[in-house]
Length: 142
Image (tube, rainbow, N blue to C red; front, top):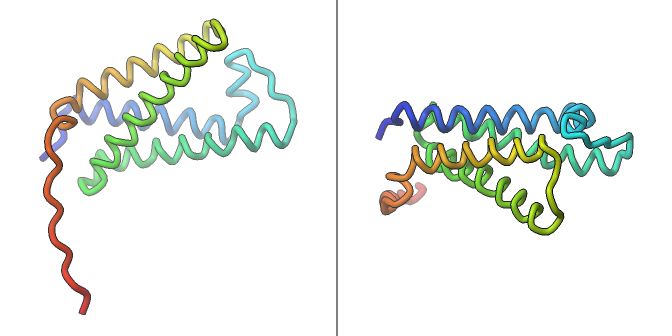
């Protein structure tokens, strides 16, 4: 099945967002977090702990984008995009409940993440509730 325009837009936006944010955290964590009003300093342990998930987020964004072009990766791409853009706002909402109100820029990030999650759910709702395609039987090695 071909991707619809809405599905391509949803995957493209989510993949590009994850790739850009992940790469920013990976390569410029001080500048990225300063945009949220957070000063990191030069603690190598803290920077390492931030760069690692930044790399994971960037890789997730790349994988999401690959699903637009490679049909074999489409299911992984959709699952990855939904995982990223449902888990991030969930974590922020838990933080809001447990820690209180963060800065306006963090609330703005939450709003963007919720909007992308809603777009993904709207774009893929018909695929999310379909039974999985049967997996072809493996051919024995010779």
